[in-house]
Amino acid sequence: MNGIKINKSQKLLYEKLGYWKSATLLDRWNNAISLYGEKEFVVADRGRRCTYAQIDHEADTLAAHLEKCGIGAKDVVTFQITPRSEFIDVLIACLKIGAVPAPLGMCFVDDELKGLLSMLRSKLHISVKTQTFALIGSPVGHSGSPAMYNYCFEKLGFDSVYVALDVTLDRLRDAMAGIKAMNFRGINITMPCKSAMQKAISLQTPQKPVWLPMAAECQSARWKYSEKVL
Image (cartoon, rainbow, N blue to C red; front, side):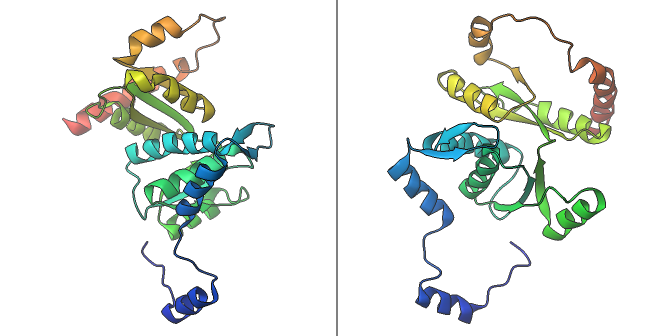
């Protein structure tokens, strides 16, 4: 990470005194998983209870999500999340892909928040207000949907992100559990998962469609995007 300097003499001293050890936070987390996997780890503010293994599974799903967003080693990921299990999900997911987790207080808003993000060179900011949408199926690497929707979100000022997640049929159940756990706002499903989901979905009382108010605006933004790339 650019801008961080470590005093080598102090580093050696801390290592000698045993304050700093060679094991990373991710090493310690993986060790905890092997020792305490099925034991309870988190009781969130809303009463949700999770084991080490559940958090690890959710963090794996989110890590794949972050990589699809272009986040990699040494990239700074800032986040503002109230005391809930998702805070741990984001923290562990960052460690899994080598990104730098940078939690920020909920008190930072507007220009002060923008200044912090700029100072930290944040590659991605996640807040409790950020809504996540996804395309799931396999293969999806060729899909233009993330580029189109993210362009729309940016132009329309929506605090949202759209990603393509490569999910094979044998991992569909696990993927849906992760998507539900992380409160995705909505998903698009393509083959080979589409047919399986059609059989699994149970019809419920229709609610007012949340996408309709923005559909026309997204259509307009999509045309602008098409003109941009062609």
